[in-house]
Length: 332
Image 1 (tube, rainbow, N blue to C red):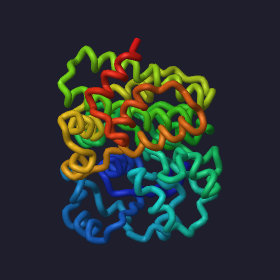
Image 2: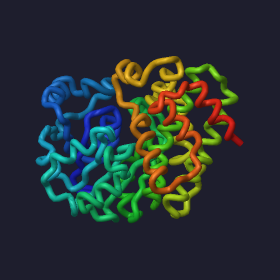
Image 3: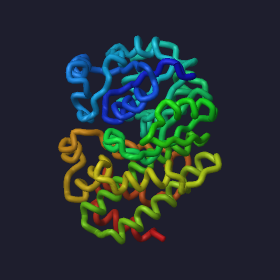
């Protein structure tokens, strides 16, 4: 058994499936919470997730599935949270188990809705998780490529580097390189912001405004990200590290990026509702844009023209081309 004890995957999407695949390479067994019993039964019968990454066959004899979130929380020592941020709070509100002595690992790249808090702050504040047992995952890594065993990279953040390394060991493998960091806030905020900027890059793509402008957008986005995370938290960081710049690049350019694809639809004239319905998946950046805009407007007031532009397009219904041109006037 690893030093983090029994690990439970909390969520049933593509990222949860990819992380479960990694865990099963190093852990004898895992627990897995999924909300729907029919999905669990299909998973057991088919030996793969029926809804996501169906090409990944898993050893179901080493997985204990349950739709009872409290049972899973009671049995596990470590909870790997992989729910979409818009539904995160509603899932956790069902929990009546004491989580204060659990290890919590967040792979949620978003903000807690209505609270405007990053996951680590919310778990420490509302569930009394010990700060040195709160871990976060970040980095340039698409679930689809983990499923294909492509070389991938993840950063595990925790104020206790020994705990970070313990979890890193649980997911490391021939195709997965891991590093550790103490920059929890920076990793979490960067993960939210890169989704916002990915929507912006998708809008530019959808508008067919060209690669030159897209390059300017992304290069200015990393500067905007650096301004914000440095203002919010003074932990030393190199914004060119893969967990910041690498994640921004892969999310802004990859065909696997939900946020880029969502933005591209907006650029091509789709409404937010129509784009969401056609994708049938959650574009975290849509919700993250509103949360970060509110956090910045009420607490920090950092100069963030790209964030403002995306917010204006998605929530103030400003014409995308007009908002992008206004945004571009600030680029350096």
